Image (cartoon, rainbow, N blue to C red; front, side, top):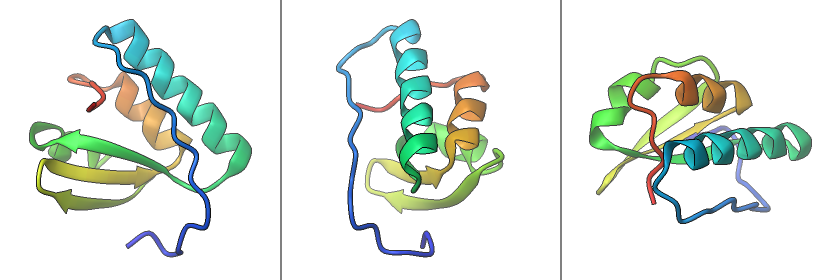
Amino acid sequence: MIGFIPTHEVAVLAMTNGRPEHLMLAELTARIQELVGGLVNAELHREQIETVQVLPGVVSVAPQPWGASAFGTAVFLRAWAAAPGFRLVK
């Protein structure tokens, strides 16, 4: 699905509802990805899938019962944060 089997995971979480916090969390996650490598795993609502799957830096979008998981680079995460309807899934 993503071309390799991950050996480590870095989780960046924040239980917030505000747009500024979601944007800050996306940027923090993008910077961490640039530092440590690997891919970002972002959970999506069903209505976000169509928007996200065409963004730059997307490696794979995998269906899940609640929507999908999108795997990509920091470029993907920043592009998604700039897209209409951006919101992180809790």
